[in-house]
Image (tube, rainbow, N blue to C red; front, side, top):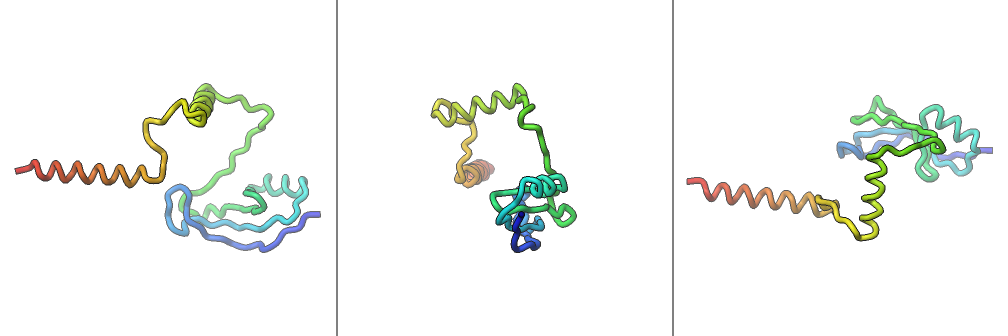
Length: 126
């Protein structure tokens, strides 16, 4: 028997375009969920993150979300996907570093560099 709690609507910041409260979903907490009930929800477009089960309300979202399902047992990665996997493995082993840093400070550093370049260009103009 499935047990769920707190079915309600939730607004949250868009993970894609970063618009404040740009997305909306129905959600509930799955205290206990049978495989049959879970499959029925997935077939209807519901998603899961831990115990939270949610349904994106795309008509209320700035960037609509679409579920993609694949048969994991039949999945064959493409050449590009295999290349990315090898790069991630090399990155984790410390054998490779990306050309563009991916830390949180990168955007701030890039903005500072652009401002410095603009100031230098402005000083060079007569």
